[in-house]
Amino acid sequence: MSGEWNRLWQQKLNPFGLKLLEDAEKTALRMMVRNLDDNASILDVGCGTGRSLAKIFGLFKDAKGVDYSDVSVQLCKEKGLNVSLEDARNLPLKDDSVDLVFSEGLLEHYGDMEPLVKEMCRVSKKYVLLVQPNLDSKARKVRDLYWRVTGRLYAEELPYKVVDYVAMFRKFGFDVAEADNTILFHVLLFKVRV
Ligand SMILES: C[S@@+](CC[C@H](N)C(=O)[O-])C[C@H]1O[C@@H](n2cnc3c(N)ncnc32)[C@H](O)[C@@H]1O
Image 1 (cartoon, rainbow, N blue to C red):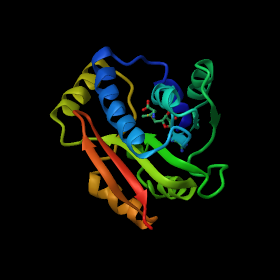
Image 2: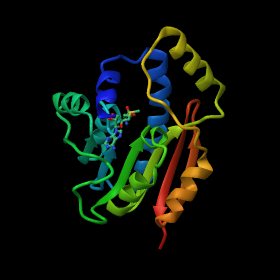
Image 3: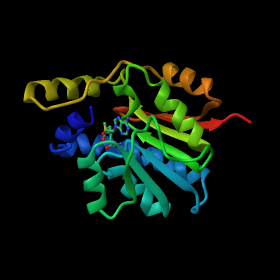
Image 4: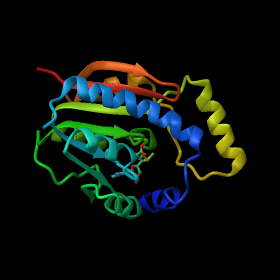
């Protein structure tokens, strides 16, 4: 599957799609800033080409990313980002070693998201922040149709709802602390249960 992502990352996003993604990322960054000090450690899991990671790094200097696509890791390195080639199901990190795990557009590609969620919750001391597709969005249906008609390569997305993420994180001791929606995405902040 990492080979599939290598091919996908050779395509460019159109400006409108990018704008909608950036709206979700701004919402996520606001949640981070509201809840963390500047010196907090952040791990971007499935960081892709580092679009969000670069913005996170602009606010939190202790920000790193992992991805299992060597093309994306190389693109991140060219941007000067701190990244490594890892499988998110088996992170080489100690338990509770980062303040916040961030993940955008990863879980919906897995029929079984549990190994990924378990690992995110294991390495996070306090928060996990997700940006996930908003399936109720009409704009998303239009975008998907546009992608099909124009022959864009895209990875399959499973139809998870917010309740599915909530139930899965609850299993590993994290509950929803904040939630917001943008045109294409849900932004969900989970906090460890005390
Ligand atoms: C939809 S992209 C999202 C990338 C980035 N977060 C963004 O929003 O632009 C999903 C990314 O997750 C990575 N990925 C998928 N499964 C992974 C795994 N098991 N371990 C690490 N990275 C993974 C893919 O290589 C891809 O770069």
